[in-house]
Length: 238
Image 1 (cartoon, helix red, strand yellow):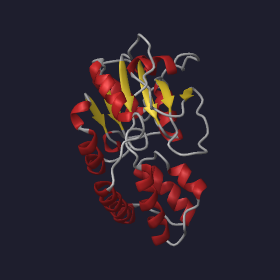
Image 2: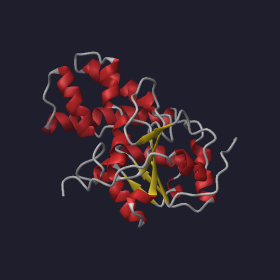
Image 3: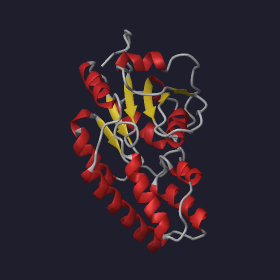
Image 4: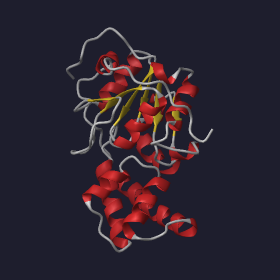
C-alpha cells in the first residue's frame, strides 16, 4: 500500500460498514432489485440511489412510495425478513473488502486509535460482514437497531462517540453514501466521504475522496482538514 505520510492521528474514527469497509452494496442491489420485482414494480436507478445507506424503515418508506403500497406492521416485518434473508445469503457466498479498507483498519490498530463501526444495518444482518471484518477490530459497534432515529439523523454517530468517550467534533467519520455522510456531518464529525457508486452528489460539510486506497490513520486527519464542520446539531428525538 502506498500510504499518505502525515504526523497526526484522529482522536477517534467512526467507520460505516456496507460500501465503506466491505463491498456489499452490489449484494444489497441484487436483493433490493429482486424485492421490487416481487412487489410488482422494477426499481429504477434513481430510486435505488435514494435508498443507499438507509435504515430499514427509511428504505421501506422510499420503496412504499415508489410502489404505491403502504408497508407497515405485519407487511413491514414480512418484507424485512425476505430482504434480510436474501442479502444474508448473498453475503455468506461473496464477501469482499473495499479498496484500502483492510489496510486502513490495520494502520488504525497500529496507531492505537479508538475505532467504532457505525452502520444502519440491523444487528442480525451485520453479524455476517462482522465475521469477515473481525469484530475485535472495533472498540464500539453501533447498528441500526440501537437508536431511535438512524442515519441520516446524527444519533448513531453521537452514540458511537459517547461510547468511545470523545466529543463528535474530535472524531473522523468515513462514509460512502449521502445518507451516512449527512448523518456524520450533522453529528459534528469531520467526514471523509468516499462514494461507493458513481453519480452520488457531494455532501455539504463532508470531504469527498475517490478511494480509501493509500489512506492511513494520519491521512484521515489531513484529508478532512480545511473547511471546518459545524457544531453538532444535537441528538434527534431528544
